[in-house]
Image 1 (tube, rainbow, N blue to C red):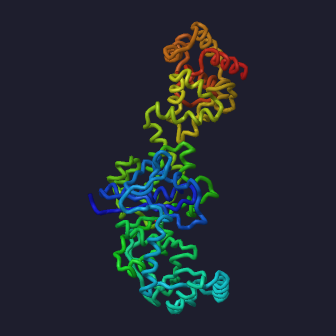
Image 2 (image 1 turned 60 degrees about the vertical axis):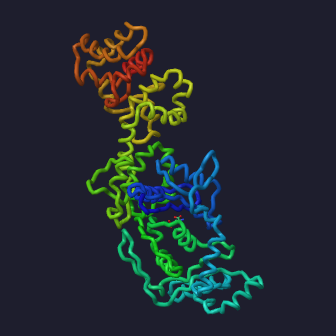
Image 3 (image 1 turned 30 degrees about the vertical axis):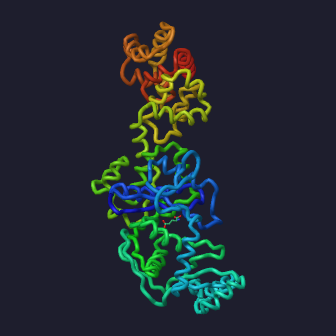
Length: 491
Ligand code: GLU
């Protein structure tokens, strides 16, 4: 066991964003590769953004993705439970801890009480904007003597606690992806550490928790990079060693803009619903911003763990390419057992109205064959109904190439021979389906493309597609006879 301890620290504000899943994944891979510990902490100090059920949802998404963790917040028998030595792991349950450390900063003069009203802060900001300055707190309360501040609090005045940044000091840290980052305190704000409701801000809570939970590496999205100097300064104030920082490039769409809800799917839930397999999504996400040294692209979790290192995480944003995701996912659709893919497809099929659950149960072998027939053409499970729909109900032939095939002169003879074969049996089985084309060939002397293309066009409406024998078997005698009649009528 190494000393490495990392954490994923989402805020329960809704569904897990795909970028959040990638952050969790990289933390997980790093922990597992190095025999470290991975912790799930819930950062719920912003009560205005709290969404009921979000914690359960986050945990469910991680579980689905195959990302497990060692300590923190879990769901067991539908209940939220916590495990580990360093709890509580839900920030809203740690308020007394934060208060203790905030008080320590106040007493040592590293933080101060601020009584400015929202109206005053707004007008200061407005003025600064007009003057073309960066809006920030003007420091009015910095010099209030502590005794006086305490009296004002005793009198019931509302207050927040702010960090008292030193003037004109460079704060530096080494980021594992970005390299050395330096920011001067003159460009920073006296960050609020504790709000008037007694809740800490993210910045205060994250530093206290990462320290108390023994986090060695803070791995998070690069949107937190500008906040890190404040955190580094807080570590210094407390006399604590800062962890290593690893800021991951943002997940971008093809226009290099942040992936946002407005452009479609962004939550893990969305991707799951569309029929991406967890292995496919995880494999692809690992590649958004990282690549292994050997250039491999198809990697299961165990391969990712083996190959993952932060030094191959890129600085530039990772582009989220849906086509590539589809390609990776299709690989896993082929790799799963047929039984699993068939089972996972049931909700999509039932929802489409093509088949009922009872019909599936009544002939499971037939259902397996149905899925087997199209599975190699799938990128996502949601496509199953559309791919198999030609096997259900009336066939309308619209494909230009199919219509062309059916105009060919040998077609009547082929149809006649096919009908004769069909009428010679009571019912179609796989034996019949596997042998019938040879028989038609024998009877007519027509072979190769001239034989297969028109038959395929007549019964499936397409000149390409899945195995002909599967199509024949799945359609059954009556349906094929009907389709052959209709094909004749098209001429
Ligand atoms: N709660 C923060 C978030 O929602 C976590 C940032 C961090 O990992 O420090 O992303």
